[in-house]
Image (cartoon, rainbow, N blue to C red; front, top):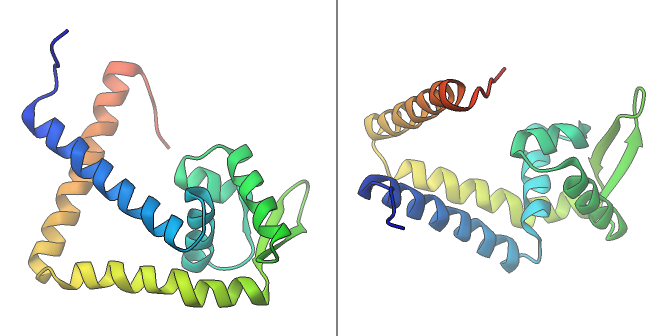
Length: 151
């Protein structure tokens, strides 16, 4: 069967895979799984006390995968879980976790900021505008073709 992917789609998919692989290698370099990296990243970005389900929904990762990674990080002394209202479990960094974030996750933010700083302000705006348009058109087409609806 011959591929129906356009040249542009193939290139876009290759770029996406390359970025995904880069973050996978970063995670491995600092001794984390991909999901553990995302957990630390989320907490560093949004702060302590977040819910497990928020992390899972933000990254479109199963709650089971996030829960398993959080339990693993908790057993290593990086995180603690505290029960909130109902069955909600809030995630907090321990002192060890805070040190880990400072040493390994904050440099990722700096790395990403450096990337945007390599662009002119106009280029950054254009990049973001085009990505937003891609997502908007994707959502519209997903609704039309697959009856998938978004909040």
